[in-house]
Amino acid sequence: MSLSVAACAAVFGGAAAAFLPRVAHRLAVPRGTPARSACAHCAEPIPDWVRAGAACTCTGRPLWIVTTGALATGLLGAALGPSPLLLVLLPATVLGLLLAVIDVQCLRLPDLLVAALAAGTVLPLTVGALLAGEPGRLGRAVVVAVGGGTAYLILALLPGRGLGLGDVKLATVLGFVLGFAGWPAAVAGLVAPHLINGPVAVVLLLGRRANRRTALPLGPALLAGAVIGLAVG
Ligand SMILES: [Zn+2]
Image (cartoon, rainbow, N blue to C red):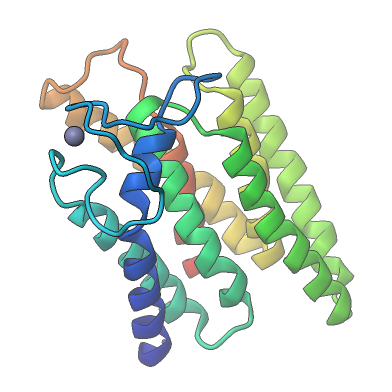
């Protein structure tokens, strides 16, 4: 474990996450709808994108987003140490957190952001593996991406599963990253989301914050599972 790398990664993740609430609030809109230019709660105009802190003066401080960003990046920093992989994974984690926040708010994983996550991970990892003479990692990454994506596509096609195509696309991208990291990461990262979402659903049901028909976002569990997989793999 590398404490100094973990601390630097956590500071980066927490600081970057502080800028996410406003972006997430603007992008958490139904499919085909332009980004919000005013607060959904008080209609106060939100003209800019880049500002740290709450999405609007009427919303609370987004401490949980900052804390989650710091924890996820700190965990990766501690697990991976001073690895060049972190240069790809830390920005990807922040982008993933943005996706998770949007998914929680409106049950959507916007295609453009998933595509950005794919471009920000698949391209540099591919170039890095080829430069390092490790094409085998790419083969494993593609196998896990296709396998994970196909499994989630089958789940999405089953009636009543509440799984969207956004989840399938995200699982495919995360499968590539996890497969690149190794088989243990791939297995842990693809199993963990189900171990996370089950108890979350039970807690929400017990707290009467959801009923059996409430659609739960899968994106946050997929992303948290990927971070766990990368950390333990
Ligand atoms: Zn407001």
